[in-house]
Amino acid sequence: MALEILFVASEVGSLAQTGGLADVLAALPVELGRLGLDVSVVMPDYGRLVADRRELSPVIDALTVPFLGTTVKVRVMRSDRLGVPVYLIGYDPFFDRDHIYGPPTGGYWDNAERYALFCQAVLALCRDRGWRPDVIHAHDWQAALMAPLLAWAADDALASTATLLTIHNLEHQGRFSRDKFAATGLPAHLDDRRGLEFWGDVSFLKGGIIMADGVGTVSPTHAAEIQTPEFGYGLDGVLRDRGGEVFGILNGIDPAAWDPGTDEALPANYSPADLSGKGGCKAALLAEFDLAPRPDRPLVGVVTRLARQKGFQLLRDGWEDFLALDYGLVLLGSSPVAELAEFFSRAAAAHPDRVAVVFGQDYGLARRILGGCDIFLMPSLNEPCGLTQMYALRYGAVPVVRAVGGLNDTVSEIDPDRDEGTGFRFKPFAPGALRDALARAEGVYLEAPDWHRARGRGMARDFAWPAGQYVEVYQRLVQAKRLERAMGPGRTDLVSGDK
Image (cartoon, rainbow, N blue to C red):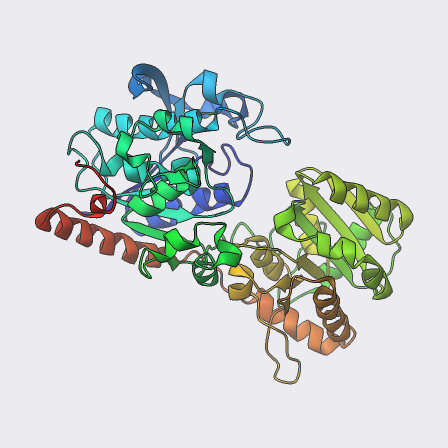
């Protein structure tokens, strides 16, 4: 019998999305389904924000969910557009809003209640449908309560279900004031330093880390990083307490969906065997923004959330060095930090022949930037995995990255003498280190044969989803859960109180 896996997450690509988490949830379950697993996904129903609502079909009109000492009625809809069933849990007072998590100024004041209700509704849905998945795979803080809720469930219908928590962004921890603990539906003794309490607050993510049967993240390098003070955001000790169990599996991409040979968003198509269309894409991108028609000038592309985590303060602080290297720049930035948005707007106004800046989300433009740029820049402060550098490599845009997280795992330093490497890396988070990496890139760019070979190596990289690694993790968790059931209580021993 195939393993039954239930994914629980706050967003899923093509339905409702803010970032890379949704890309993962739109791809990994499908890949696992192709391997023969029985996979379903549950997410909130964000009402007006859900794409193509007319494709949804009703499942349950009014599912009763215990919440804050009373009950709440939620609806359940289903989408089949991904190829695996996606169930959407709707409660309009919480989820039918203008934003998924909150406006650009900050998260909604009741996010604790919103996602606590969501997690409790997932358990109610399992019980209503008679589902007993082998593994509930929860993603980030919004779904992290699944682990403690399952561990301390009032009945044992799901007692044999293992929980896996994948951390995509440790900086966001579901940390709320202590009074929000009541919304979790958990026993009072878990409002403790050995439970969800975190420096006087409560942290949903901490509870998930402690109580999940398995904890992973999205690249091998980041799995080690988050257990250090520099990248642990205060939870490094909690992660180290898992005793070396924290693992990292690199995210992947769909090579058919990211193929410059067939991408209809590009003005010209190309492949590693015939790169002639790449020059046409660059010429079209320069013309689109009235930049100087300089095919000899290396063009840097950026597609990013223009937030502190993405590291573009380094480019701002080293701007004069960037100009001295005679680069062009096309930047597409969403969710911009005001000071960075103001700086790059001024830079574009001061250098209209070299710099173009667009704010917002434009998936067609993102692909045109990948197709038209020579170099793709990701100077991230931290980057758990990153997908855009993989897209860039596929599109023949040589990455310049900070050697952290998944960037370190997917981009290797170009060495023309050894004829190896796919990009340029730097480690210190300093403008000078970024300048040196860009200077190395320019030096190779000017040596056309070396550049063409390096670009070809990047385009040949295989970033298909490592779904088989997840199957191995699921099998290990299921076996451990069965042994735990045979031997007695497991992770609930880590916190005080009786189940």
